[in-house]
Amino acid sequence: MPPVAPAMPTLLRDLVPEALAAVLRRYRDFPAAEDAVQEALLAAATQWPAEGTPDNPCGWLVRVASRRIADHARAEAARRYRGALVVSLVPVDEQIALAADAAHEEQDDTLDLLFLCCHPSLTSASAIALTLRAVGGLTTPEIARAFLVPEATMAQRISRAKQTVKASGVPFEALTDAERAARVRTVMPVLYLLFSEGYTASAGPTLARADLSDEAIRLTRMLRALVPDDPEVTGLLALMRLTDARRAARTTPDGALVPLDRQDRARWDRDAIAEGVALVEEALAQGAAGPYQVQAAIAALHDEAPRAEATDWPQIAALYGLLVRMTDNPVVRLNHAVAVAMVSGPDAGLAQLEVVAKDRRLANHHRVDAARAHLLERAGDPEAAIEHYRRAAGRTTSIPERNYLMTQAARLSDAPR
Image (cartoon, rainbow, N blue to C red; front, side, top):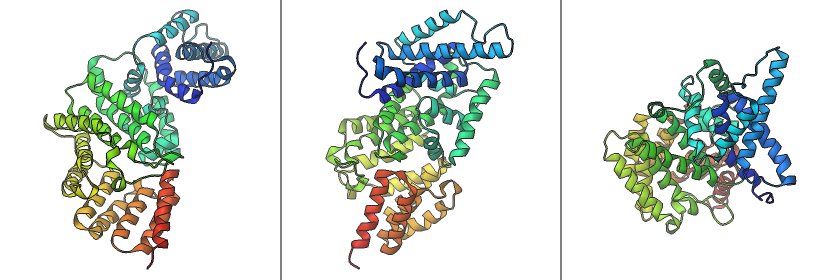
């Protein structure tokens, strides 16, 4: 066998959706399948460094997970004096072979797994949370931050989602085209949250996790291929491409955050911008613009401005106003407040921000303090700005964001009065 790849943790993370989909397709029990795959990952992390990475690592994980399910089923059967195993529709050895063969199929199971997790027995919020956990590999704290809820609340939500699926009696199985179409509206927020966590990681030493944003873009392309006439899916892909186009300019060589207005626009990916603009124009031409199309239009206005000073803030503010009427998202309202400040002055933005800050979903969120600090600085109140830069730095769990905010506070502290 070949030696273990240096990036084995990344390899294992990338294999999870495919392995989980293969096991889930055979056994149709999400909690059992997820537990079995996690046990297989632990076994891989122990064995592969010593024995080498298998030629077919996904098949290895599927085989081990299948054996774990069979072992657990035997134990349960013995404990309850059952004569038949839960997974004994066919002999266990045959099941393992079938699951292993599934890992060889020339198809991508990740999108199928995404659709399967958007289960009809779940609320939209629970389906999104469960899918981010299973498909995106996000941790419970990361998902909780994305939903603006406490970690304990999210842990309970994910646990209840698994139990709801199990108790529903509705199996995980291949979907019809009609069933896929019915779940598209739940799948899209999952992909966008996955992209957002990749573009700006909610915690950790690096600003971004390119593996997540790249995977979200790849899956969104696949989703668009399934529903090419859906303008919101096209708008979502446009939004991702237009946002991701700035990736190279968002940090310095040592990983420090560079805000949008100070980025070197020559480093922006012009091919991605051209694709994103073409996509959003195509989507908007179909009429009935949705939230992703509007956000893509805002991103296009940023990307098409040759300089930060040339940004069309009046149009951006108007689009955010439209988006506020479309969604109940407090972060959208926060962004609208900043756009209003860019058009009508910092005092107008601060007045609107005070209303936004009363939303309990943004309680203790660092972005409120960061925005307030920025607007206070523009309003000529450096002392208050310093206070809020420091408060925002204390509330973020992203090290690059924290360092940037502390640098801003230090800059104002050192400035002559």
